[in-house]
Amino acid sequence: MKKNLVLVLLFLFAVTVSAQTGMPSSAGAGASQYVLGNSDEVLMPVNVWGFVGKPGQYMVPYKTDLVSLLSYAGGPLEEAKIKSIRVVRSGKSGEEGQVIEVNVKEFIEKGSSELIPVLEPGDTIVVSGTTFNFVRNSLQFVVQVAALAQIYAIIEYYTARAND
Image: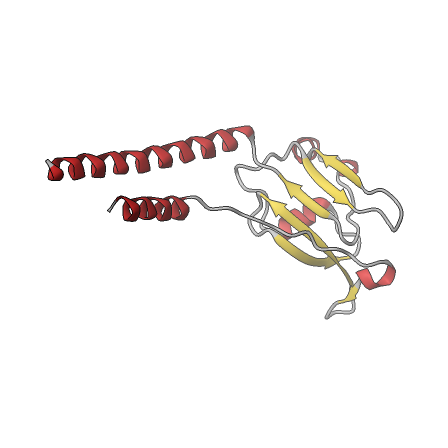
């Protein structure tokens, strides 16, 4: 009985906790990073991770900027930390890559297009969540664990009473 109860609780715990994983895509070199689109425009692959409407890999026109890509991806979510969006750019063979941090909030306030980088093939855009979002998710996890502990305690109580 206790073994089945533990299995049920583990199952419930696994159902209530979800994880999001992603695998970075590797970009080739040179012209192989570009694709010719339907209307004879040159397209390039870029990745969007994190707190946007539709994360994933996008084939976007050559010289697309960060704000346009975020718009393709459904825009940043309310929980997104738009003060610190990272553009991870892999280095060419033998070179080290770079991470560009962009303050999109400042762009929205000032309208200065110099703040927004033009993307390159294979760039990965990482939109992190705010600290408030992290705290809220942590508290939700604690509440879920407490609920499972309470269910376990109630079952133990009634099992002990039935055995008396």
